[in-house]
Image (cartoon, rainbow, N blue to C red; front, side, top):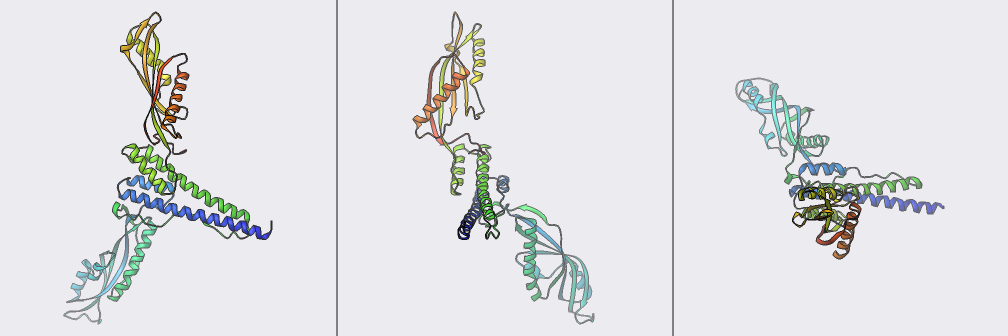
Length: 393
């Protein structure tokens, strides 16, 4: 391999890696935005939204933090005497502090020093330089405590210049433990936040084909993993009835959510009901005993929990009024009903034919030697499959 062809391969791998990284970042931003929009529209609950963001490895919802700091506050004010200056400093602070935006609350703790500006404490009004120990509170919205502290520091730094112009200084800042977090109201959560966690990064790959291949594969895998996690979590919310509402309406919303993110829609299927009428030999005894015996026989073809081997529900009932008795004992009519969602059929006729064949095969397996009187299938609806698997669908 020539140096030129090697360089071309590395450049191609690098381009593929960058494309996958950018796609993952765009998907993460779009998924987070769509999820927060659903939260604001009351389509999902906050715990479900938080769990989905965590499952997808995305930025959590912003929360409201109260950040506290101890500091010394110094300022100059006019008072009639030393005692008045000290008393007012114990309980109040300059009005300039109340006008700051974003807001900061300042609570005096104790007075450190009250000194006349001219150095002489004489009768009558004069300027006093006051220093007090205070506690500051400010409120910020952030996704993490560390980010909340940074936002609080930025707010205070911005205020220091304004306060300095008013002759007020804040020194000796000591940040305390944050209070919270508290939930931000749904309507105040920003759906357009662009931050993304966990995006793959590329290093210098010049001349190293193995490293370039590994970087490309890692970026493509990261994109595929996020797509899979988003899809699996969305399906889980649907099948666990986490969102609630009529199944098909909710499923269509989730389908639109996935499609809008560029993912495949949910699998669709025909909802088919298959009804089988058969007659069961039930031996001698009373009619009630014969019906009980028929129910025991049909347990082999009854299921309320679909699985891979029998992806349907099936149950039935006796029709005692049409029971008859002959020399071999009772013959009990039984109606058995299958509820199926076969996928991948272009037409309703194809779906009903497939469903009927599955029902006949199941009854033949469960009831060898029993004659089926009639088996009919009909399509109820066409929509998103009722039986979804987050790991496979």
